[in-house]
Amino acid sequence: MNLPKLGINIDHVATLRQQRDEHYPCVVKAANICLESGADQITIHLREDRRHIQDFDVKAVCEVTKQFNKPLNLEIGCIPEIVNIAINIAPEWVCLVPENREEKTTEGGLNLTRDPIFQKVKETCEKLKTETPNSKISLFLESNNQILAKAAELPIDAVEIHTGDFARAHINNENTEELLKSFENSLIFLKSKDIACHAGHGLTINSVKPLVEKNLFQEYNIGHWVIAVSVYEGLKNVVRDLKNTLNGNNL
Ligand code: PXP
Image 1 (cartoon, rainbow, N blue to C red):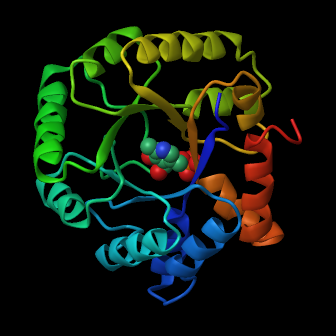
Image 2: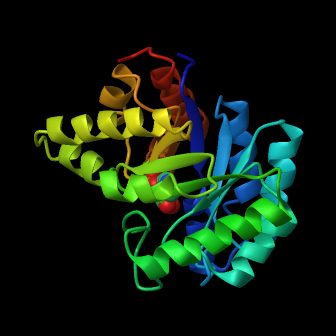
Image 3: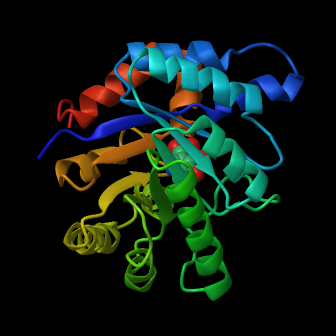
């Protein structure tokens, strides 16, 4: 199996900047440092309320990823205005996520067993496939058989499994065996449908280790922990360490 890819989510560099409406810290500089330090991809979420990433960031980060010949993974909700921005940018990946104005962060995957959500996601996937055919689509989903069965009906390239509950259980030293088993089952199902399997949310360098040890996912998108720990260790060092861990060292 190929080594898993590391996507660094740099939304929270923008969170810090927006908190004071300043020009620092610089999202473009952060994207450069991540890619120089071994990240395989940059992930950003353009939210409808623009609480962190702004429209100009999307364009600027896209330029950086192009310079490094690495993918941009643009997370978006199924919101027509935002979908049109994604179409104009034509990133390598569009990751569809649920979006709720009150939430602090994405609170879980898209519940495709609910028909209105399934229909909205289906329309968005079809629009993206028609209008930006070179962009691959992933859906942020729970590790749940019924939800994944619905996902397999859609024109998608990958599923990003929500690892938030697993990461929380890991931090709390709770038993994670059932969650790991469920990830394994999801992986078998997605593989049988030729859909790639990514992971993200809440992960840290410690909680990602059991997932890497079990060779579970092809890609990990990690953000909040990276930016938080960079305050004392530096972004370059944190990304390097994380990449090393994904390469199977320090396990
Ligand atoms: N993947 C998805 C789909 C997300 O929505 C987020 C959070 O924006 C992440 C990964 C990164 O999560 P975290 O910041 O908790 O590492």
